[in-house]
Image (cartoon, rainbow, N blue to C red; front, side, top):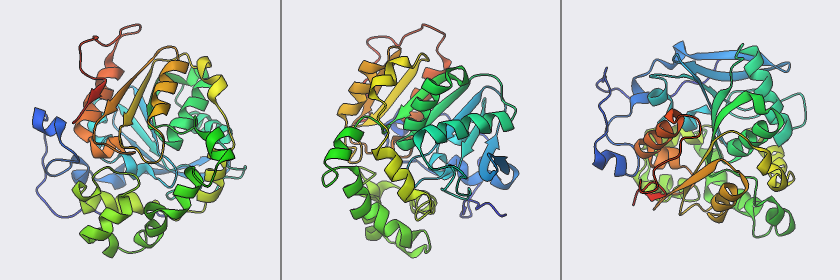
Length: 335
């Protein structure tokens, strides 16, 4: 089995990444040549047998465990702008969930609960016993929340990036206006299948903008290289079952059971998951706080990578029971 490698254009290698300037932190999208382009990913990709199925995993760096979990129609490459940054002082594990990326379809029915069990089993296979720090986007945040509830000893800290899960009641009862309608009919999920099989779509400016219009506030500002890596995760076998799982698994009443510190990150122009859900997560999870990025869509980690990396790092470095300063200006940022 051959795991797909990111396609990296030629360019000058920067051996020591520079600290981002304030203008870089405030920027939309990556600035300059991204660090991930100079990583030899083949050294860090591995196949792992989990619950009798092969999972594709990237495993890089040393230190506390930081686990990245992608969302619906995603893959581990959704975190390309973040993995090298945190791998400087963490052991970073990025997964292709079963049925997505290069991982096989699971033996069990796809569900949020079963995905949480799969992550638990993956950590066993990787011989990771200590609590981990988990960052999940969209469906990946939903899975992270379920893991925190079902397997609380597994998590030290949780980062929810535009997490799904709270609007499922609305989606189930009014699907013609909800996530299913958007996911099945708008550009990302339609053009994505074609784009995943041809570089032509992402190389053309207008097509690239149409492709990412549902998930990014300013798709024209994202470079074609990262767009190509994103859409390669589209058109996978697990999509339909995972979408059903998102729409049929309420978690609202159980969120107060989450005990680990939780950081909630959202974009104010998210077209997939309502902005109001950020406040609901903050209200329902006791030890939590949120940050809202202005002029940002569903993929904050790619749309505002420098800001996202800095904010998440600050959260991960906090001592237990330490809270952010009230005048930090971190609650609504990145104009």
